[in-house]
Length: 391
Image (cartoon, rainbow, N blue to C red; front, side, top):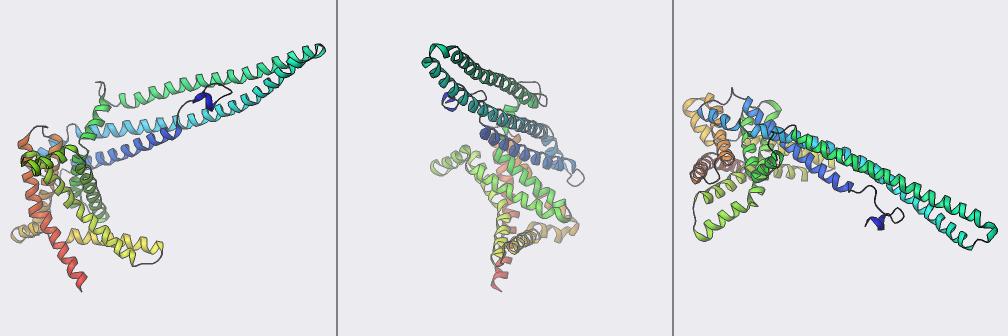
């Protein structure tokens, strides 16, 4: 391949694929951004100590404050630095390859000159032989000169590539604990637990939204719904969850794994419904408008208003409690329900892999929460929308 690309130099002095490097940088940047968002959400929950109290809050914070925030923060910083290093190398490599192509073009011209000089030398009469030899020597030296410059470029490329590789290691090693393979372990942990991480972050975003004020509430609710939708997609493709569902439905193996798989997908689906419903209403509003700007504005207003309607719709459990304890009990009740969702979602991150009891406990907790709060709330919203549509 190198000889075909650089036939006159004879080798590629600046190998590498800038598009692949750019694609890897983009992936690292996206991952770093996601990890940064996750870390900030977790940090927000941990710093919000004045709004969520009690034994459950204390236990959850003690579990959450150990390794997860540190891993998320370090992984975010590591991937951000690695993406920056790759961006620098990409730009340098593009410059090296442009220079290599310029040397190849010059080598092609020098090779043609050398070919003509050789032909002239072979056919030169005795009187012109010395001049022909001098022309041949100059042609050979010119070709050798450009090839020497190409070898210098190759050495520069090799040295700089080594520096980039070293800086990539430093971008992770200086931020990580001293044990080898920390970044690999962290990324593997994130990959293995991505669905549970997204579910937990969705529950955390919903919990924070309860105490948020002003213009933060609706964006947080959309974030929670979007994370639930992403979690559902990841969980639905998880071989462990699919295997547990298959064993339960086809073999009757109704164990903790099966219960956890069913409730996990159900929780993700219920969490995604508000976002889907709000987007659907926004899309309907946009379809009635004309012009791109009008449609975009109608979509934003429609989806925003729909999400507000969903959030403000009666919540049966909260209504039942406030009827007996007063309106001051509303937020603590909502927070308790949301905290149960956080605990159930987060149990997959902190519970032992083989703990059937932990799976059953999380499944029962989330089933109770979904059945008592999420589903009745969704029914109330659906009934309100149905009445509005029939008018």
